Image 1 (tube, rainbow, N blue to C red):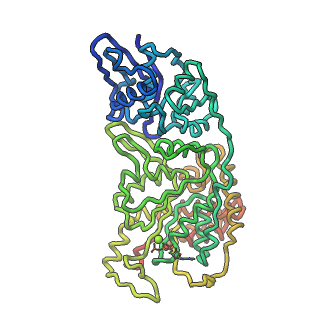
Image 2 (cartoon, protein in one colour; image 1 turned 90 degrees about the vertical axis):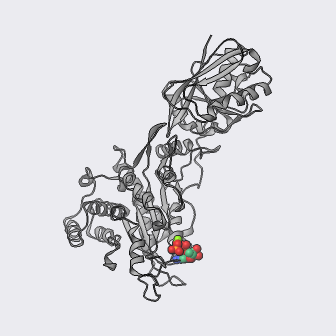
Length: 511
Ligand SMILES: Nc1ncnc2c1ncn2[C@@H]1O[C@H](COP(=O)(O)OP(=O)(O)OP(=O)(O)O)[C@@H](O)[C@H]1O
Ligand SMILES: [Mg+2]
């Protein structure tokens, strides 16, 4: 009699039900896996045979039968070792060595030759699917139990070995479901005090706070050693933590990329800083079986691109569409996946290859053509997408050249308040921050007082700015007004927002 065990595969970040069917007929021993398995799935038969033998049971080869294992639906390519456990249990059930009811149970896990279970990727997505399809129980390797237990309404059974699973499903030694403690990791997010060690740079700090409050993209432009990198890295310490909805969304992506190892949900926003030699596929996402790239791993958090002009032009241009849409669709032969990618882009660059261009004390040794070539890596459309563009000039050694305008603790509190205001404002819509307001609802959320509107329109006309820039400045004004606790966007808010776009045309000084 053929038997059927339920399992799942993860395509992109979402899980899909896979039925593992096992059947046998008399004849010389053979074991075939069908249903578009990749090499790691095909190798499963050797791992399964070894694990069953070392667990004290009879492996499929001991039964002198032709065994066929079908992974349905047959038109979806299957990859990875997480079908080992359902295949092993299917073989044992089919050969009558164990008896259990496979209904209402979803099972995944890789097996070692000694019968122990190893970590599987995408368990959170599988738990979401299992709950949606009405399964009562999800059996996973014990190291994945914490991660899956975030999803309530389904029993998560974490097992260490194949014998533990057999004990549980045959009711000989049931394993109790893993219970989510629900504890929020204390002080995990919003901690750290790097900013207070960064001397001076008051206007850059203010720009970072505004960016953090509204989720705005920011480009820092300045000579070497001026503190751009340390400022950007300090950003992760001031962004407020995610809420539960956001963290489940993010954990699903990280789980499918295998980045969650034996941990609960993290409420800390992701901070990804890929090196400029990272390939386009690793940044955008893709691969034979579409996997999330850096932009999706930075979803709801920060993508920091240091030394921006050093990134290949193709990578930078590929960022344009996800920056607008907040998602990316990657299509490959093995299937296509739409991956979320709502991130805050933080970038840093020097003014020229030697870094001294524009400095009134140091000499720039770059020829004008080299400066242009260097800056041309950043296309106009990409620059247009940067809400905040600021200069970070060299700080004096004691950093007290500037008047202190930013009180770090006060600012951290006002960011939290501004994010709360945004949460209430967008309670009935799928967006979270001011930066995500689109052209359809900009007039609804960004109401400017008449004088502010006049100043903005004048600036746009005088500087020949795009409609996108017009909307971005309004959204920046919205965040600055939120930080000040004002419902309406006033003149001083718009003036500050305009001042954040100093490098609107990075080629103007070279023309
Ligand atoms: N304002 C500052 N306060 C304290 N230390 C600073 C400041 N600015 C720079 N530094 C020091 O200079 C070092 C270099 O800073 P950072 O790496 O951020 O420069 P950068 O602007 O990114 O330079 P590059 O363009 O070469 O990448 C820091 O590690 C720190 O030691
Ligand atoms: Mg740097």
